[in-house]
Image: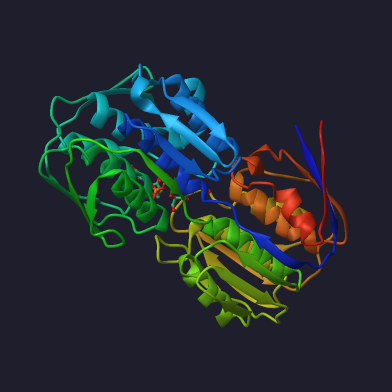
Length: 416
Ligand code: EPZ
């Protein structure tokens, strides 16, 4: 298993270009299954989760070819409806193929994703609402077995604005004769991006960006070329790394409005940040503590919680961060404490007494965003911090060492 050695403390400078969003391209790749026309996707990030999803599509019979920065998918040769455990267990987002397979083939057999480090992450909202659309669903030997004769145009209301459930149900409904609505749908920008992609193929989705998505069924799709939005969580990571190390950097290639709540919180803490539509400029700032609750979009994203805790270890004073979305998303805290951070956990709350310098020690990645938090902390730490199990990081951060090195960080990968 690879390790990263990060030599701190360091300051960063220059600019970093953000990759296309993992959490936009994962559902968009699943939506490839809906069409029998060629689909050309631009600048798909080279991430483990993306590779897994593309392998899953290939296993279902989709032809994949790459030409420079454009990857072409052809699902006219779709020849299976089964997403097997060996792939699904490595990436929960595989469950996104359920909706498209049901819409396209009327049947699907998808392994239950199982738990993951940050929580049990059930899929009850996906399944109960697919049943309301007319699907027959049974669970058998660790698999979801589903089939449907004719999808029913239905008014759905989500008990919780689940990102994945919203995306699965939109994809399931694009060919349904009549109008399907999803009330209390999640508002994350990646959902808007999926809907824009589907409309580019010929779907009729309105209410995008509102809590009521309306899908009018169409008969078929057309050939399309599409590029997903920038990754707002990757951008938040570089933003917090810059503030933690007292640096001036420019972040390019992401809609600043997709990060508005995070930027507003940081500005309230004293951060000097200037934005245009597609760039975020951050300057060395003296910060004070904060009180944050993670929430569904447009609130503070749970995916930036770990990075925020790492930043708060460098902020004089008390900060309190409450994780409201996942039940076990503080695994980075014991690792940060190994570096000397003063953090107390009380149920959903993390209480950080910031300002004390951190010192290097071997630490371990436990999940994707926790890994990003450890990198931020290591950049501020005196000495060589050894970060183990970096495969977690490779799931969601493209060319991380390259990007941080270009910003001036001393970071190298040791292959084991
Ligand atoms: C998406 O996961 C993201 N993943 C997650 O990012 C992100 O943390 C999450 O949304 C919340 O923003 C992708 O987009 C691939 P949810 P998803 O359904 O769809 C509960 C990352 O780091 N729930 O909105 O699984 C669930 O347990 C990853 O990039 C149910 O109870 O999130 C959780 O507590 C991590 N039943 C809450 O809702 C369901 O059927 C939010 O889950 C579905 C969800």
